[in-house]
Image (tube, rainbow, N blue to C red; front, side, top):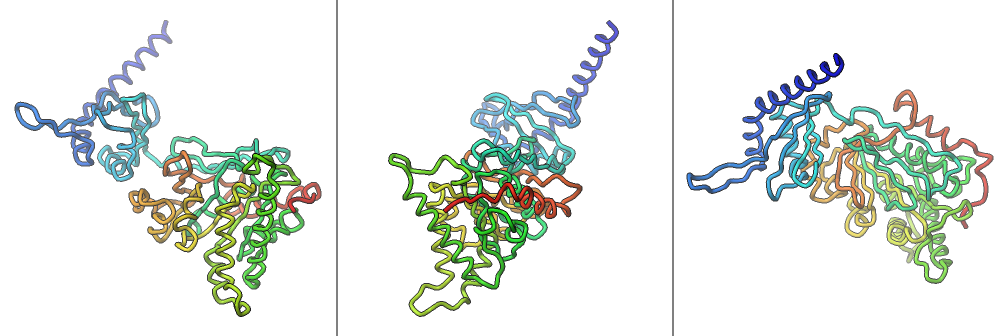
Length: 407
């Protein structure tokens, strides 16, 4: 009986505290809603009345207060999530940020957060080495609600990730490629002028012969992309009757992840590379190969991963951007790069995004609206150890992973 009485007393105290919070916030809530455009003006007999979403109750039982708000007719939860609206509401309500979740068709739950929910590291759970790409979920990020954004890479679109130095872009690449490298029916190919993401860590593995690295020999990168285009054409030509894409992957016919690290920089190098008279410039040859891979590679079991400091107009504009369905932007120095990759909707994120800490990105994918999320990193003591862990992961278990793959 004593325990029950204590629990009832605690519930009453929480209810009283919740009502007091509503009373304290009612006037602030009304003025804030008017200021950010969440109110409606209604004409009545006595004049004009301003109507705002009803602040129904507050829950103070958790670490952060929660407001339950009734939507007005025509309102959506997205109206409260708009970056500028959310920022202004947070400031008015005295919290660092708000988190909005729908509750049925007419209500939203607004959590008043006293810290950034993305301030905690997201650690990669590496798949077992005997898993297939068709069954393994690759962790891409975790959003502000703590939900993992993960996908099977054989179902994933082409990807573009951008970010300034020390924004978390490289750490994200280490995590994703380490996850993929553990799958025997995945081949990591591509071009990397720096030779850090590809190249030396992969020496002695089945992936290495499908990689071009360094900046001295631009023609080696061109030849590698031409080889991938030839492999793509061969795969499409070998598709069985009544089948329009390669859907089953094995160690002998793997999914090929084509990493293009700083393609924009490679194109700049290629623009000064001489070619025989009558032959297309090397830069144009590279762009032609990229265009074919991004437009036709999906049906041949190829997934592009374009990695760049800035979404360059040469690579991202028009058709190519439409094909790069999974898009991540870590902090970028040029705000227009955000718009180039994500479209005009990203303009509302410009101010906040320029202050993003390392590891925090804007993520967009088919079925996933532009959202703020944290990228994963490999297990280890700190980000400073991530590259060594990445090297160990992709070079690990070499003798068992030297079987012949691809044509």
